[in-house]
Amino acid sequence: MTPPKATFLAFAAVAMLPAGGAAIAADYNNPTVVELFQSQGCSSCPPANANLNAIADRPDILALSFAVTYWDRLGWKDIFAHPAYTARQWEYSQAGGRSNVSTPQMMVNGRGVLVGSNKGQVEAFIKNHDRGASGPAIAAVAGRVSIAKGPSARPANVWLVRYDPRVHNVPIRAGENGGRTLPHKNIVRTIHLLGKWNGDAASFALPAASAGPYKSAVLVQDGPGGAILSARRL
Image 1: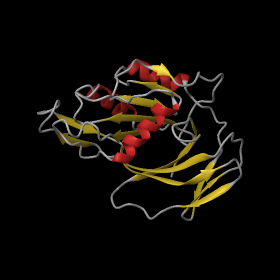
Image 2: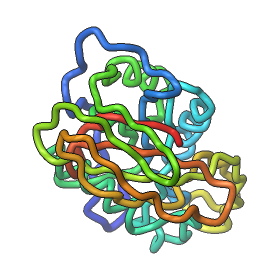
Image 3: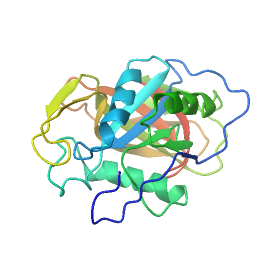
């Protein structure tokens, strides 16, 4: 949904990149990455949020909920929002040739963008934007993450994402969702750039773990706002 008096534009679901050919199904060690950009202050977000929650425990899916900040001035400040998550959404928008962002917005493997409110459409995008197993292998040993050698057209970003797998039922006391209690799951708490991967085998030190019962995952992404090449839970 577009915030009032702002320049954010809602849009229909479109594909950023064409779906691949015969793809290998995702699994726990090669999960499909589904990112939801949403805000507790947006009345259009709860259906998409519910759809992300419904797939959050699937072993073949890495579901990540990013709370954006641009709704915070419109009656309710999202308790999980961070400017880094808003910046990540803008990177997807700019890489896809779009001049605006909106909520809710769901990204599948960095390759397909949709609103996320329609369950059937979410499932179709997960199927149609399976990236297969062509990306570099990711391993984690003794406080380091290793990215195997593989093809790379340009330097890729290596991200460490830490997220909370618990369900948080948040009472919303103002704004468009005032009076509702919204459940959130797989809430991103930090996203940290470990470094760049250029196709050669590389290793990166992991920062100290954040306080809290969080889980971690590594994403190898083709430049800012590009396709997810590989992903792995740690």
